[in-house]
Length: 344
Image 1 (cartoon, rainbow, N blue to C red):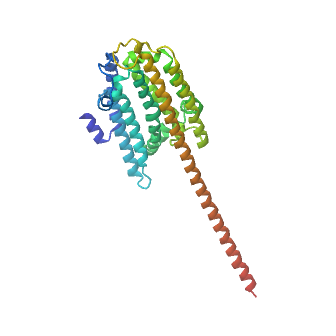
Image 2 (tube, rainbow, N blue to C red):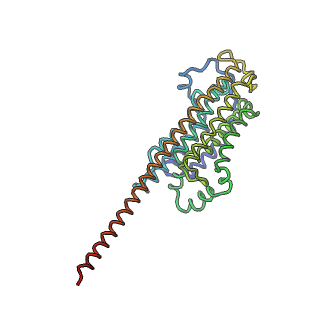
């Protein structure tokens, strides 16, 4: 009831305060929890699609994100009725949140520490589905449009223009961070620790989502950034990420031993053997990753072609205006010369 009153009154600051307090409480409860034993039955389509659980920290964060987004959109639409927030951006942003919810709250979550292949699907959803969809929503642009001039000048713009953001947003750095997170998480103690400790597991998800958002921010190119890439460079930026993802997937597929002791010692009585499950996970990373990267490349190329068409149309309009101006000057000159010839 308190949250509802805060939302109704429009006090986003108070709502964020409530959220911060709830996060501290939930983090403590989450760190004390355990993943528990392996499920008694193998996953099925019905269990994955219908076996949703409410993880309070994740669910609360998603609800707050939806509420804040819709309120900011309403504020911008009301202030700028002639230039409202495009519906496609709201759809993309909410779809990105939906992908996060599906990855962390659906039946996938029940099996992520039991099957590496399911865990891999979870990570693909966070890095290659949710992150680009959220970037397509252009949240920074929405925040800038909804904020007051004073907040933009004193808070948002200084952050965007800060040295830290400038370094992290540099495309080479963003590319390397994404690749380093993917390799470092899969070939370090972090992955096995995340399977044993729920808090580390949550931090790993945040790391994947954060690295994904950082990578897709310059690739999508809708939000303002300290570094702007033209469409051909964006296409190359995304294209070069695909082979490193493929190489990582192939490495996982061809590894002859189980990478993570948690899966090897879990003792489940159903499903593929741990090594076979690991190969399935690598194959999913390879196949789904390549498909999604190719789809992203296609979208960037389509955007590039649309940009060129708009640019060409603008050039044609400018040339036509110049021609009209020349014709008008010629007509005035002809009238003046005719007047001079008729004068006595």
